[in-house]
Image (cartoon, rainbow, N blue to C red; front, side, top):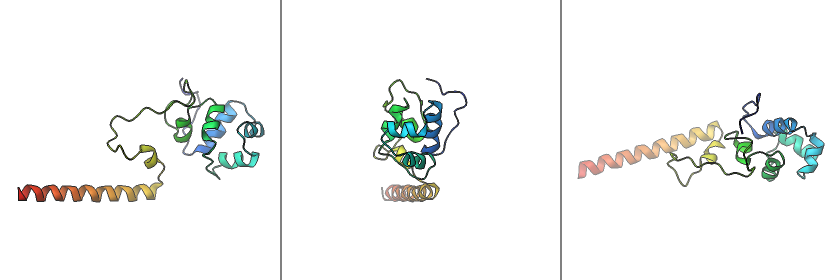
Amino acid sequence: MPRPPGLPKFDTLGPRVRWWREHRKFKRSEFAKLVGMSYSGLADLENDRSQESKKLHLIAAKLKLNAYYLETDKGEPEAEYSQEPPTPMADWPFQAVSIDKLNKLNMIERSYAETKLLEALADIDAERRKTKKAG
């Protein structure tokens, strides 16, 4: 299904949950009971004061959303099946490292990971040059 008109891009989970709850016309108290959360727990989630991930799939199912979209703001929000898995990235070269894990890093953590990757690539390049000289 296409994105609803007026659906903004969200940087974090909380505002995404709030927007969709309001879009589906649920009151916060009603929705909190529906997903087994306290009113204040849902308010904390929606206001980014907590990262309640244990209820993410239930929240997605009750809002009729794809959980992957709800967590990342990527993909189709209103998937045919609310638990539809994301399509694998064909060109992602690191099978043991999920792109989602990298996407969860903050700016400083990403910079650190990028520096370490560049160092590893430089070491590999240096080893290749040594091997060529020796061979």
